Structures are given as C-alpha cells and as structure tokens.
Length: 170
Image (cartoon, rainbow, N blue to C red; front, side, top):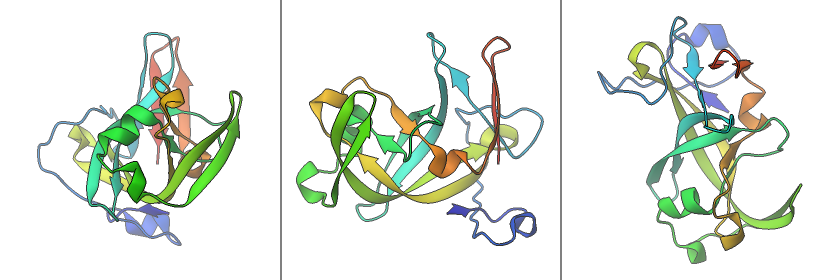
C-alpha cells in the first residue's frame, strides 16, 4: 500500500503519506519531474535505488540500496542489510521459505515501511507498507537486497544503461 499526502487527489483509491524534510540531501537525484525517483547503476550494471526500511514493530530504520528485480515475487533484505537493522533474529517469527534460481532459502516475514525520496532536492517522500522478507543466513551475505513487483508494479520505469538512465515515476 502506497502512502503520500501531496497530490492526494491524483491517486484516488489508495492511501498516501507525504513528508517534507527541509533541505535534507537525497541519495536519489530526481531531475525534471517531481514524482520521479532516480536510481543508479553499479559498476557491473545492476540497477539500484535507495530506500529507507522501517520495521514499525521494533522502531528501527536503515537506508538500503535495493536492486530492482522484476522477476521476484516479494521484496527482501539479505543478510548484511537485515543485520544493519539491529533486530535480533530470535525476536522474529513468521518464518517462510522462498525459492529462486539458487534454490530455497529461509526468511522471516515482517511488516515494514519502505520510503523513497523524490522531488527537487529529494525533500518529498512516498512510502509503501509491505510484508518484507528478512534473511539472516550466512548464505545470503554479499547478495543485494531486492525490490520487487510488490512495489515496482505501481511504477513506470525508464531504464537505459547505455544512457545511464534509471528513472522510476510514481
């Protein structure tokens, strides 16, 4: 579920939340359109955007570089990003198993809010409440956290590595 206050009439039927943070610099650098989240490509060409993950039950947040993955069914934090939340694995429940190209892995499903900065100077935000899969497995060390269709389906994405263009219109 997406939340945003600004321009609420344009998004009838969905609940929105909008926040302003003054002149806070953003890791995303939107250009022309104030509803655009701008991403970046890694050295090997993987498409990423930054999001802030909050686990309301624990009151913790962490900034995460998410790999855009249109082939995955749900968003997830892999070991390094999950551990940066400083939530003990023993306090998580709701274990689920997810399959992928590399096989099946155990995750903990936790209600989360993922917030993305957009607009001139990145002072506006759009937030999504989702069930986020967290991996604490040593096998997921080095794997990027994934942003999937649970959020990406709401966006129009312009992607051109050749032109170094990754823009997500919300």
